[in-house]
Image (cartoon, rainbow over all chains, first blue to last red; front, side, top):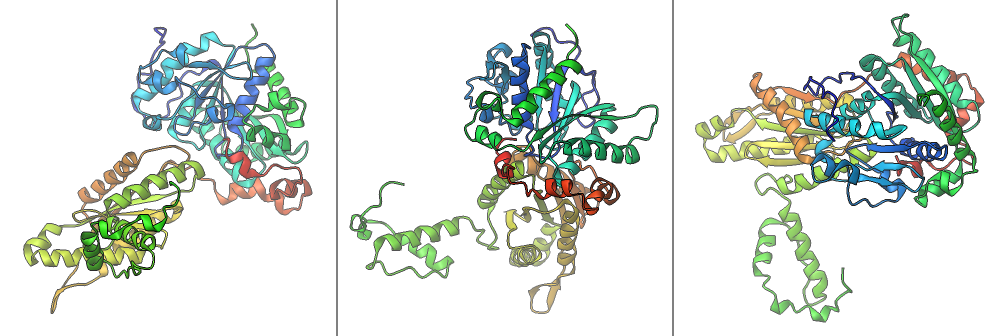
Length: 277
Length: 264
């Protein structure tokens, strides 16, 4: 854990300074809660692992972690212990049932729900320790656009925004995209539309968001912002069943429509996001 | 709870209930059921009465600090899970010491009671008004939209400023309050201490910038204008069936959204 690069000089927690994003880090965010962020993070990790990649999911929802609930894991050592120096980073990494590694936030991270310089530095230190060991690190962020969420996203080279076709979700997704474009100068944001009623809805939604963005947000034609539609995950009763059983969809019913969509998403991610080895 | 106890196992004669009875008789207009009918029902009423007493501020009848803390903790959990905005206001009567020094402590008590009653009238039944200590009050407003926070706080300030408080025959005075407020961070687990601290900072600002004013600590909110929303959802009005179906949720195979909420 001595391979700390350069902790950010700015100790001002108020501004979300875009740091140099780390390679191979993918942030999953949404704006609105309850649209399937954690579901996407965990199942995408399983699908990528199945393709032979070394994957780690970090529960970056410091305030309200629930990746442990989704994966039905009861970790003894968590990110909290690493933050407080009670445990080494490698001791907090556990294997999830889908063949990937996880680093769970654990409860007791309440004091980290505010982005202080210490939290930033700890987080950076941990990320720098993790990234060299995996083909891809997925950050499952919290809902909303708190400074912790924005900071976690700022560490990622790629960002996926998960939304559902509901107006509330789209409004929050749009608000999040606005911030990512305005504060972090992101030019590519990948869209995953969850719980779609029919094939093609997701693409239509992405096009719609792109139009509003072009008209209201993107002021500099030299710096266009592109929303890349990645996949529609169809509304599928199997998802609910897997969640109720606390199983990964990719493990429980890998052949169901939603799982097939997640597999396709993994293939696309591997092609476009992960640097050629 | 353990298995229900047959009521004959509770012997009221052996319990020291005199102090409790005296407390309840003095503080509450509570008629206890006759002990000879059911000692369990009688005891339950005594316990309920004591619980109620232990959550109240004796002078003003508002929630006391203990009750305030438990409501605050609960509100934080709700906001973290639901994202419904909740507002905490901290209020302090301006120059209260001067009231005590000039008119005496009894007048001070009357001012506290008048402000307490006024506060309770200014807010909704779901809101919790508490005496935080001394001349400081706190109000927890669950599910209070960020657009309304300023309005509510300002209404409280104005109403108290306009209210004459009679402290003796023919003598009425006016007091003002400084108000600081903060919204609980949505979707983030926070602590009651962090939340009150943020509201306190704003109260301090209100005091130091001249008193009798309101300052709210707003969470970072990204404003999405009506125009933007219209462009986002305008086509819905055009009656595109695919869209209407996908946003109205009338899809037979769609999982209930409630189920997804557990997992995100």
